[in-house]
Length: 374
Image (cartoon, rainbow, N blue to C red; front, side, top):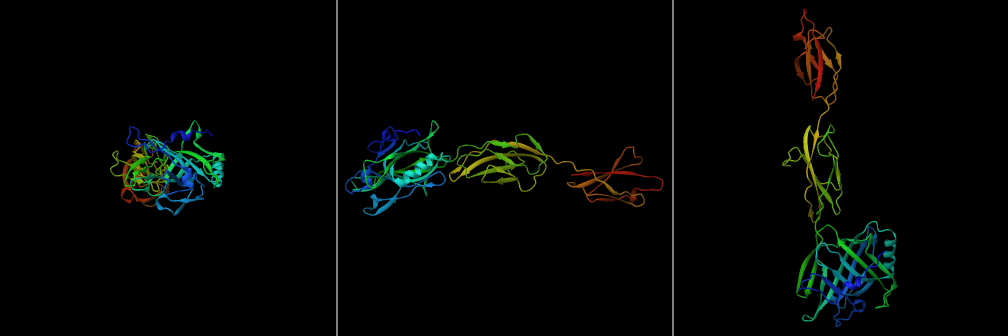
């Protein structure tokens, strides 16, 4: 694991109102563990963190809540530094002291290969307002629930590390430094940035989905007899669902299919009629949707029905009867005076029989064949 120098990123105070938008805060680990209401040093708490799908760290440090002195709160880590360059796509970088139990959990997560680099977390960074003479939140979430991110990758390494050596600033309880860099998920989140106890503003971290799904199949120009074709497109990171539209109008003014599956494939539950259709997809999550993909066309053709089989030739009677053909919506009847002559159309019926008594005579035999239609 590449060791990155998190401590170089932190300065003594928040940089605001300058040409840079960086938010860089150095926090006192000693004040975090041994809070004194008159010390006035910055304090940071990591209150929740889950790595991947199952590594949830324990809130096993009980410390004073700076905004609710002397009441205490259970936290996961005591921060020594916070850094965010301030743009919605920039990572949040944290350095904090965690317990021996959490150190082991992080080590196990790192050694497991970290195939899922998702991070769900929460934090509060506190500063002291000398005019109001109170602590206030300098950085905290400004959304319901927890913040969601992905561990930053650099050169094939994930930027997550935990020290094997105990921290030196506070010896009891025993604590270990963890450094992590977290990129935002493709959802719009916000941090509340406090300038004083009475002044704060919100900054966006992460954005809604911008990656447009790519259509896979059926490819543009496909001609098929499958009346329930399966539509496939690429999976989009951060998507919670997709919107698929299928329409026989290229402007999608009246879609035959307008559905939102949770996965990147969909098979219609009922048949589409013969004709040309256009289809497109967009990705969705709790923050919004991507643009639609471009539209591809697909043409559905119906297979011609199999030929009927006469089951009651009218050697002595006046009814032609034949078997029902799967997929047929009707039957055309043709006749000729000569079996090798020219057959002419007689009638179209939707049943499987036809009365030929009106066309028969004692002087003239007729020959017939039946065509199934759809």
